[in-house]
Amino acid sequence: MQMHKTIYEALSWASSFLIEKGRDENAARLLLQHILKTNYSGLMMRMHEELPAEQQKELQQMAEQHAAGRPVQYITGVEEFYGRTFRVDESVLIPRPETEELIVHTLQQCQGLFPEGAKFVDIGTGSGAIAITMKKEWPVLDVTATDISPAALATAQCNAEQLEADIHFLCGDLTEPIAHTKWDIVLSNPPYIAYEEAEEMSEVVLEHEPHSALFAEEDGLLLYRKLAQSLPDLVNRPAFIAFEIGYLQGPAVAAMLTQAFPLGNVQVIKDINGKDRIVSCQIIE
Image 1 (cartoon, rainbow, N blue to C red):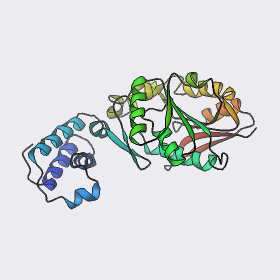
Image 2: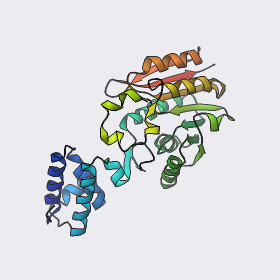
Image 3: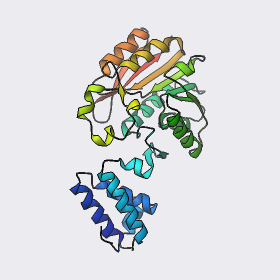
Image 4: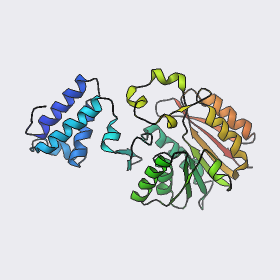
């Protein structure tokens, strides 16, 4: 990379470089915004400013990392979710926009059901995005978050401290660490990709995001089955349960919850792209 005097020239170089490497040119803008500690509008306003040589070198190094396949979010160490900035690293999945829809659906269903708040658990919290967002959006909730990975829990705790969210964190597999308590609301976005689907996935995801948070046995359905079997003894009446799912898994996961809660109201909810994305179950009695 030859030295470029202005931010505009540096951005043009990085965009062209990433296009040549088969990456999304928009990543160049995100990297530059991170380096300059600014947003899109701020970047546009500074296009004709000089970019110091040290920051040009930083942009080059970051662009080369992304060209090699490392996700932008792991390079910058952050991702936006529900209007807040979360720290992310290779110990956790990068939060996806589709998961925001799980939050929206839950708030719509539960704030009337539990007007004075509720005991809520997020199983497999990863970065803490679901648990922390629920606490920030509905402060009266008593929030617990679990994960099997100590490294993921450390990242989630860091996010909770940074975003000033009072969360109880527990380490363990699925419902094992929460079996001593009854819950009003249970959410989970567990690993749900079948191992057979790996060959269809982007190498950016496959080579960098934690496989323990991506894949599950039984065509990706194993953890839903385990949760459906455990939860009848762990939830109060009324209660609300919702899972994020793979877009082909709606009927199977809905059947599991229907079997577990014969009197429950089970729904399959589509995401903004019209694909099955959430299965929820409201239990009144």
